[in-house]
Length: 304
Image (tube, rainbow, N blue to C red; front, side, top):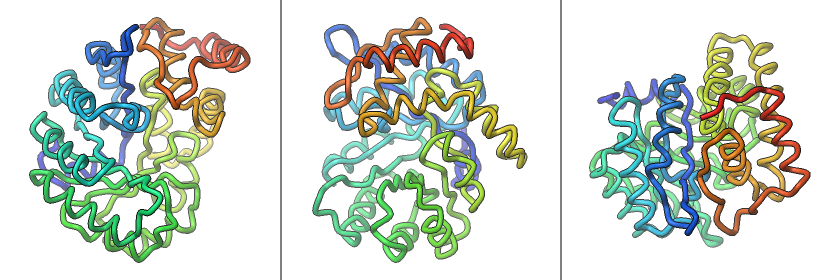
């Protein structure tokens, strides 16, 4: 487990695996069902695991549930790889979750970009400053899904003490290159659009990528990362092509099947983590399920 921000930045250049939040048949969180997923991810070599990310249905959880999930993930991981705790929503909620995540044993925080329709760029900067003040000194990774805040605001965000990395989750590679050129070179820019977008983001200097696939097939994610890190784009693209149908299913219905696809795939390989909560779609349509079943069978995904 990294103890310094330098070590954490090195881990950020690997895979940030976004853990699902399992539910039972009564729609209650079931943290114990996450443990087998963690075990497989750690054994495969995933570098970082993230609780309360979007694949973890962060916006579908109550604050109490989010606190329970970061505590559960810390217990499952037991210091073997770094744990990032996702924080967000109102600034008070984000600060509360920053504090409880630190107490639970998180090694760093992932700060969700506020989805508030009246979020100002300078307001976002103040938001992160307050989270940093409540984080008990934990390093921060910023999660940017909207690059319209502009390079100036991104520079101010990256200058906040404790910011170690940025999860870049927009497909605008030119804005990414501009942001990277304008900020401290020690900041790690992580591809935030999973495996399929990792090659073009790597091409402009991002390193590492986020992944929901690690819940289902961590070995493939690790192989893709190894290929990209060695500069073998041909192998990386071939490996990505073999899992693209999975990501295509997740991107349907305005990305509303993102978590649905992961949980349906988990059920298909023998590990039921419950349904996805509204407003995510549930279940997959018949056509989507048929494509997923063919993917699971064709790639011979390892079962639980």
